[in-house]
Image 1 (cartoon, rainbow, N blue to C red):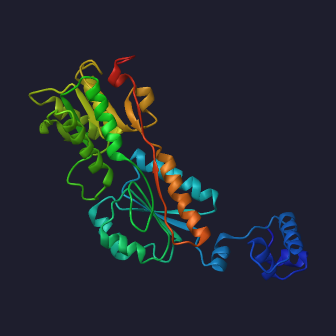
Image 2 (cartoon, rainbow, N blue to C red; image 1 turned 60 degrees about the horizontal axis):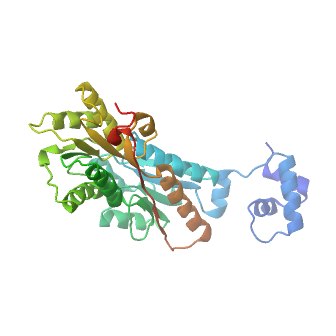
Image 3 (cartoon, rainbow, N blue to C red; image 1 turned 30 degrees about the vertical axis):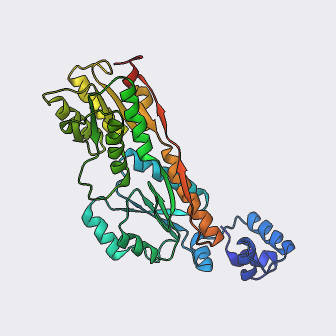
Length: 335
């Protein structure tokens, strides 16, 4: 590949003019700009990202803070964000804080200082001092999974989605309803589990249906955790007729446990999930669908817009959820 000096010689201009022309900077006539572009294309020359960063003061990197990468939800959000960033010529730098010690160390040391142009936080409900540490970086900030002051925020109505799921079971005639939740106490302070738990209790109270505490079991937002939680629920002296699983992955595990106990879904146990996992359709799982990849992509685009405009103004975007009813609650083509 040609060097910037070779392009400058061929175009009859200085290397500084080549740089300004290819970066769309002022001080270059349109005729000269077009000549430089033509020569650069003929010589197969492109500006290196590092050199461009030196000239603009940008790193072309966005830091992303995430509690997990192994869970489906986080993988999908990351995929949506990475696609939007890559198309704009930015790289994604991932920081995983899946435990309290790692989280405390990150905010104490801030390893991304001076190495990113913006920061995107996925679902971690930041404490005041943590949010303050990020604001000290002086870069645009984004948040997925709730609203944060001073951040571009993208989220869904987790409480409303949870109400949709539980009301669906109640409308099917169920009153003995269990819940598989993410686990408490939540050291990482994730907002969605709290909102969905509250929705379960609110929907039950709305119709004066009592909650049996022994039917509320933690499933760690995983398939194996959902299976273990369902097994514990089935060991109770009383058996529910329906289950609200706070994530589709936990619902899949619960369905596996029900098969092992030779219980028919939904005749003997109806189940509804939350997320819209790609396997929910072929599993026949009724679920509350959220646009997971879109959440990541939208948050990334908001950061890119803020960088491009040089604005301190932030935006809030609430994306919709939808209850998709399948055989796990209706009996059509059921297990």
